[in-house]
Length: 351
Image (cartoon, rainbow, N blue to C red; front, side, top):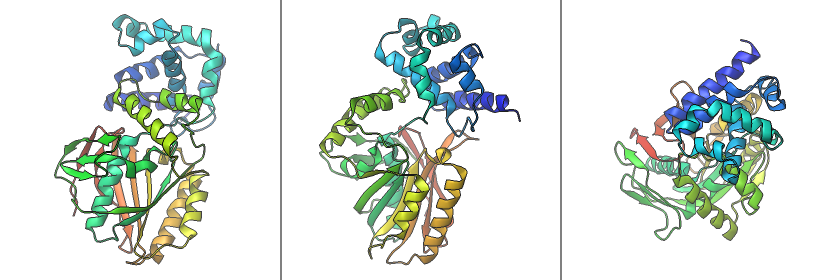
């Protein structure tokens, strides 16, 4: 397959992904971008000549983030018309995108330099459901949570949020941020558990106490999902009150280091991640798999190990909640599916 075809396929995949996940405006923007790009602009040459894997690198979302930032700055009425649902603007989206590239290319180019940060606290609902399930399996109900690809660390504040998961209540009742996703299927286990520690890493951590970094993260929020903007404001306040335990490191190096540390008896060590696996280089993913298998082989009932992930199936455009745990056989179990930003959870109720 030619590089140009890979780039076209990446944009097509992203358009379908947006449409399948309640983001038709973002899908229209991505569609207009690939239609407007050509070799006559620097942005066009960089995107159409992309060296890496355009799908794994989330190339369409890098570019889309830049356009959304321009819209949020409030200086582009015609561009903002697309985001605000104006039908005439939508019909002329490709032309408007081309005009915006011509006038604002210098502001758009830096968005190509790093992968999108799509941190979303709503995904922690799936983490909580997975931990409830692990607790029901008889693992020690005290968790050492290790998150890779933590971005700004929003999910590392999981102990500060309140959840209503199909009628099962978890977390402080007076939390400033609450989640009650539409629950499909039977409720998750209603069993008590606690956190021993919460730590995470990211190759490029986002510091939400820095207004510029906070604004950049906000630009990656899809405009259709308005509730996420309010969540982000609340999360920023929580970070300013107490920053999460977040380190700058590659996922594989960091995870290997964490697995090498002594594990407290009676504490379950859990690797968690959401919508990040595709961004980790293949060699890094293989190192994490090997390290987890090796650590799993050494796990005991007093010092168990688990692996909980919420990642996209690019064939179905669904996000699957998968868990493994040791000293059991470590086979993967699909616990359910979930909306990318926590709007709903389809629970399979595996026993």
